[in-house]
Structures are given as C-alpha cells and as structure tokens.
Image (tube, rainbow, N blue to C red; front, side, top):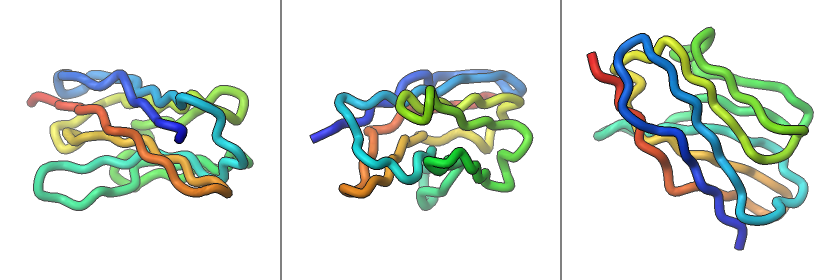
Length: 115
C-alpha cells in the first residue's frame, strides 16, 4: 500500500512562509487529482489547493494569491508554498491523491502561525 508522507510544517510568525512537501512511498498509478487539505481544531477538513493531472489548479478563496501548489514533472513530490501566512491558516495540513485505483491520504503536518 502506497503511503503519503508530508513534511515542512512548523511554527511561523504572521507574514512568514513555509513550504510543505508530500512524498509517496511507491508509485501511484493514474493519478487524477493531487491536493492539499487542512483541518483546524473544531472545524471540518477543507480543500486548500488541488492540481489535476493536466495541471489545472484550484485554490480556496482564503488562500488565493498566497499559496501555490506545484509538483515535479506531473508526479510526486507535491508541494505547497505558503506565503503571507495568517493565524487563521493554523491547521493540520494533509496531502491527498485521487487515482484510478483509489484515494491516498497522508498523516498530516502541523502548521502553526503565531500572531
């Protein structure tokens, strides 16, 4: 079973930047959509950004212009560059890949933005 592993989270001050990475332990066949989700305490998990196999991106309104999703040569690793971070960006960030053989989730990485 392929596993996803996120890294790059941490504590940063308001206005700072972080770059999250998501690596896969094996090959994911026919990936359709790769994305980043986040879940803050007491809130539902929400989509932050996604990218289709064709390169089309989608961002939550709250992160547009601040976050950028990218990948290496249409494959893993998947990245999320986060700039101008705000306290409301504090959450556990999860990597997700939807493929023709099912969906994969990472264990998450904590991002904390201090005010």
